[in-house]
Structures are given as structure tokens and as C-alpha cells.
Length: 363
Image 1 (spheres, one colour):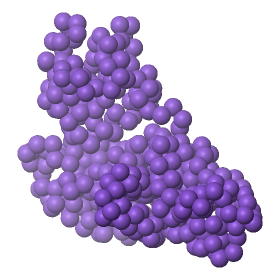
Image 2 (tube, helix red, strand yellow):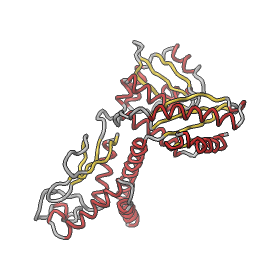
Image 3 (tube, one colour):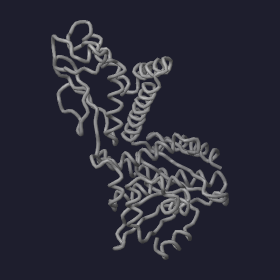
Image 4 (cartoon, helix red, strand yellow):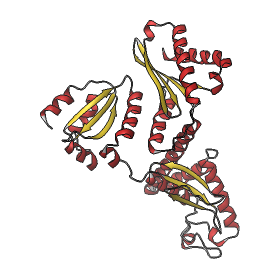
């Protein structure tokens, strides 16, 4: 590591922020975030035996760095997302799957509906599509696990009269031969749709039962396989929740403690930060804080409501939504969801009441 870079790393603060790695030409090749900048950046250069080949290649090309401090870790996550979107650093792209998204589609084809994975949602009539998902391998593993646990892993999906080879192996219930098995298959497809819609868990119950059965007969390899399938399915469901959350375009007020005398106010619409400021909470009473936050919320949320949300669902938008969703679900998150009616003149009292409660939990 060059001497000037060693000094820069040693002088980094133990504060939240974003670091920008540069090559010999001064180009930004990687953007990352950290709760403690110095410790995170040092981890690239020391005790690096466990690094992946991509990270080792990145480190070889680092000749300089700069950083941007944030008041909170949450801000660092959001700033990283924004900078990656704007700069498109080479190694951030290399460390992600180059193919943007995957979708699960339930396609209405003869002789029975098919479960397909594609890079685009199905456009066929009467089909259902779910996604986008940013990990193709997770989608494939989840669908494989569902099909295997429900014994619908058919090797002749277009057959109408004869059962496939997988039926003789116990992997297919025999819907390829029609009859009662086809009716059972359609029931299973309905359960899969319920799972992806977040309204049914029978598929998960089936995977858990298979895992437990394998463990009871001491087939730990099969038990581990079903455990991995379960993890992939839960990951898919979590992503569906994130996508649903993003689509709802909620108004969110976040109030995060910076130190004993100040808090960070962040206003979010959907997955976009509209406004942020540092409030001297130690110098203001609850009434003054409520007045400041209420005025900011009414101004910025009202303006954003007049602008159509025309941004397409992209990887960056999903990543931003993931950060916000995870923060809101964490135990440390102090936030308030603001219904549109609270932003009307008749809803001011409700808004102030909600903000009072937020301040009470944050201070």
C-alpha cells in the first residue's frame, strides 16, 4: 500500500460515512459505506486472507481514497446507494450479478399452468408475474425447492397422457398424465400463488416438514438442502415485501439520534430522501420540535405528492427501498408513517400528535 494511502487510512475518523476508492488515474472504482470508516477501510488491507478474488483484485488497484462523513449509519447507506447510481464505479458493477433482474411467472399454458423464471415478466394472457428479484440464483434455488418439496418437478411438462420419468423417481405427482394428479397440481399452484402474494404458508410448511423428516432419518445432507431451500424462499418473500413497500410510496419521517444534543431529521417519500437536517434537540423543547418537524413535513410531502412517481422499478430503487425497509423493521428505528390525509389542513392536529409521539420515543 502506498505511503500516502497508509497515512490516509490511519487518519480516517471512527464515524459513519462513505468511502470512495480510486485507481492510479484518479478514477473512482468502488464506493462503500461504514459505521466506522477507519475500521472498515483498514479491513481491506489487513487480515485479508478471507477476501473473495474480486475484493483482492480491487485492493490491488487502490491508489487513493476520499470519504464523506454522515451523521448516522442510515444516511451512509442511503448516500452509498445514491453515489453508486450516479458514478457507476467499475468494481461495484463487478460485484453484482450483471443481469439486472429475474421474475417468477405463472404462465397459463396447455395442458396445465407452468412456473417459469425469466429476465422479463411474462406478457402472456392470464399469466401472473412476481419480482423483480436481484439474485437469479436465489430465485432458481427457491423455485427448485418448492417444486421438489411439492413433488411437481415434472420432466415432461407438455405431456397430456403419459407420466414422466420423474414420476417413477418420486419427484412428480403425475400431473403429466392428467386425471386426479392434475387437479392436485392446480391446487399446489394456487398455494404457490398464495405464498408469493403473502397470504399462505402451506408451501413453507411443506419444506419444513421435508427438512424435519430428513433429519429424523439422519439424512443430514438432505436436511441441509431443504434448509437452504427454505432460506431462499424466505429471501424471496422478503423481497416481495420490499417491492410492495416501495410501490406504496409512503411518507416517512425518521428521527435519529446523532449525539446527546442533536438528532437527524429525514423525510422520505417511497424510497427517495426529500429532505434532511440536523436538529439541535438539546436546545429545543418538545413544542418547538413538533412545530419545526410539522412545518417541514407539510412543505416537503405536499410538494412531492404533486409530482407523479414516474421512476421505474430499478436495481437502485430496490436497493434504496431495502435499506429503508430494513431500518424501519429494526428495533432502533424511530419513525412515523404519515397518511396523506394528515397533510391536509384538517389533518394538522393528527400530524402534530403523531410527531409528538415520535419525539417522545426518540429523545
